[in-house]
Length: 86
Image (cartoon, rainbow, N blue to C red):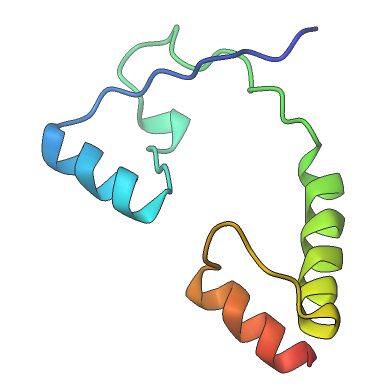
């Protein structure tokens, strides 16, 4: 199965602004949806969540010990992990 290129999420303009600022998406639990056809299959994550977790932790270690320059700033929690690892 090929990964989807787009994910559509309906939201207010105020919520869209918060999403763009935080770079995070949130959505309701599927059991609260009012349309049975919504989210019938799970999105395909690539890399998988488990692979991504290992890649993320390896990146935290690399940043902590190799003083890498970053293209984008880290989140507060990622900065805390870098601090705790180093």
